[in-house]
Image (cartoon, rainbow, N blue to C red; front, side, top):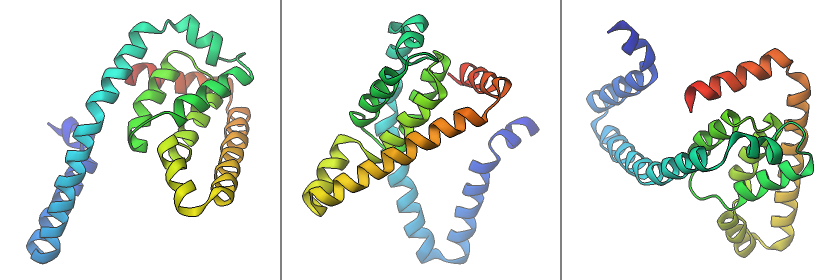
Length: 178
């Protein structure tokens, strides 16, 4: 029982917070309940298709293929694949983390996975189109280019800073999660 409480401590803490808000401030609690249910519904609508795609990626793409195209010696090809995977993605950022776990399980280079997460967070095609129509081409170009540059440099630096043992530990955790 104690293990379950420790495992789900943050979810339980949020539930307790919601109960306290409902008790102390009923008007705010009603709004918080509505937002919580709405966000939970959104999550339930997004995660099943993502999990299906992850399952297909896990079964259909052999580890050797992933290593060849996104692995340690993939070079620019790995970045391009990470860019296209991230930019053609759909859904909120939390849907990208299971995909990243599968990529790591298949031994995609950590730099490519971090770049993929950065692209998913800022350069998804629907977001780029919205930005372009709302803010114009110049803003969109500067925003996307600067973010992608920061993500790319950050991913490369982080990979260089990590020791071989730390990288192996990351791959091991991803394998256990996926």
